Length: 160
Image 1 (tube, rainbow, N blue to C red):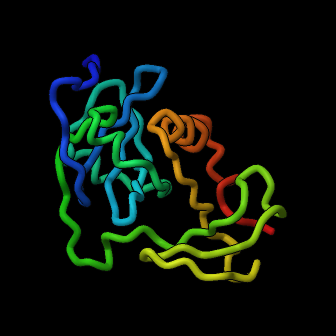
Image 2: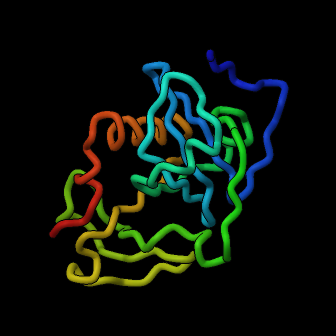
Image 3: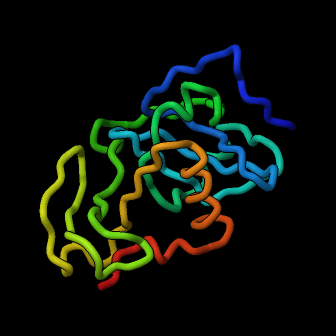
């Protein structure tokens, strides 16, 4: 199934939505909208858009923040919704901020969780994902390609 950006049809953005994200190789990745602009990206790639019931059976590979405009403008397609059982589960897990995935030694460590940011030691941050914020949908797609398609997921996990 080909994807045409839904120019005439704006989509609403809300927590719990399940998204089909078109990739440059014409396949689709999938994500779920969490609080604080985080999207959990499922460990799933497909040639056509899968039903939401199939998508949510897969585990989430990683979480990352992306602008809501990707959904509102139709760059990412809303294929359904899976409500969270409670408020706690609508938040992505704690992530490290203040460092670059390419160089873990550069920067000031912080841990972001549930909308709060606090300082962290290397011991507290070790093993957590590095929070990346994509200010444009194409940057988020590049991140998905690097982490899911090219299997470079570990470079986004903090290791001092």
